[in-house]
Image (tube, rainbow, N blue to C red; front, side, top):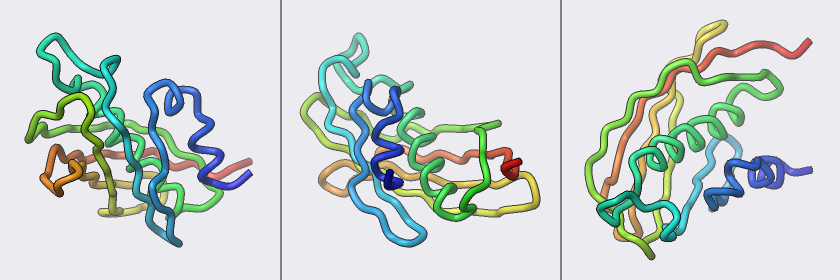
Length: 131
């Protein structure tokens, strides 16, 4: 199973509709078409989906950088910068900020189809080597 297939088969990714848009050696870009099930009471994208999307992009990009090691999110902060409406498509990328022996820091960014910055996040991840 390829890395794309592995991530797109994650039940939560499938539930929300997250897809891998592109995958390179050390970098992945994900995308999400906004549908009505993802909206809040104001008919804009729910903030929890923005946070989930940031966690997802940081996770897949971390995996590309650490290989076979396992990881788990231990902290995630999100800055919401622009509202997203139904029918829009959002994209996210992430970069490694720092990797130590057991903790990694990642920064994620979300953009809409026009290239506008929607949100940013900073995450910390616990890394453990497979046994």
